[in-house]
Length: 297
Image (cartoon, rainbow, N blue to C red):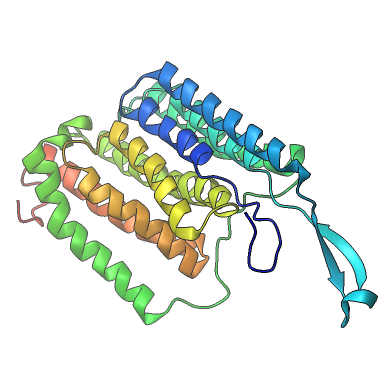
């Protein structure tokens, strides 16, 4: 296949990425580890085969000058390696999959979450930077421009929508029972820290790692759908079950879209933390009716 200017089209097939991302529901929804391993191996193997077949396509020379015949060659533009980038996603998924994701608030469980989730972000980042030396993963905390009125308005809308929808979802479906009973100040404090910490990690891994790596090879829309598969699968095992995907799928897609538009980790984290603040309030309310009398249910 060639593009309009006669240059060979070296865009990778989406099948390897789909196989790697499909390992997430295998790990976190079906909870079938061997199937996740098979999907990861198949995706990485297929990516390697595709890139091997395309090695015959010459690298594109980058030139500088007004006329082609007198332009000076200043470098070679090489496409990022799909195999390497998918291996970073696979590495993060493997690390997360070694622990149960059921919400627990004891010291050992919180330490287990901290080590596993922290490593799932840190290890791919370090491998990308110091082994592959391509700096494919970054954490752009702030955009260069202030938040717009629309962005501030969306923050208010997130709180309002959460207040209207989340109590109905958690209480009528009974999924609040996937989180432990919090009936003491200590447990309530632990829940607050845990919900917020996992929310921040979600954006570091699913958006700044998985989504960012996929965007190097696919359109924003395709990469967003792929990262949403991973995002929603993790949230399922975490406790957002029953008809939870009706909420988590749009949320995951919106977070990816917002990141593309704002280029600001700070903003997507703020959106997520506001949403999680409502989640925290609903969980406390569901386990302790009357303690937080601010919800309709």
